[in-house]
Length: 105
Image 1 (cartoon, one colour):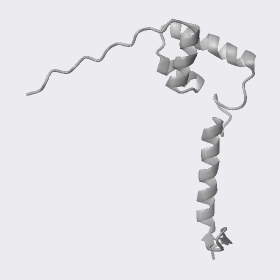
Image 2 (image 1 turned 120 degrees about the horizontal axis):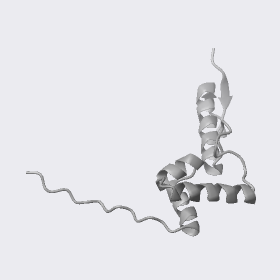
Image 3 (image 1 turned 30 degrees about the vertical axis):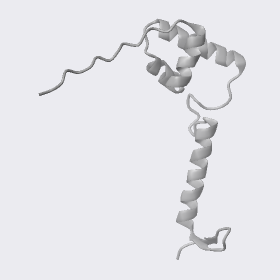
C-alpha cells in the first residue's frame, strides 16, 4: 500500500514524489537564505557588531598570511564575498600569475 495525494492538477502523486519535491523546495530556500540546517557557522542573523567582529577577524587572518579562500571557508562565505570584505578593509596581496606551460611534443 502506498500513500496517495493529489497535486494542483488533480493528478495522484505517490508520497515519495511529494517528499522529494518538498525536500527540493526546502533545500532551495535554505540556500537562498544562507541558513544552515545544523545551526553551523552560516546560520542565523548577525548583528552589526557581530558582523564587524567577523570582518576584523577575517582581516587579521588574511594579514597573517591566510589565503582569501581559506578565510572565506572559515567564516562560511564565498570567495567573492570575502574578497569584497577584505578589499574594503585592507590592501589585498597580488595574486600570482599563472605561467604558460611549454608545449608538449
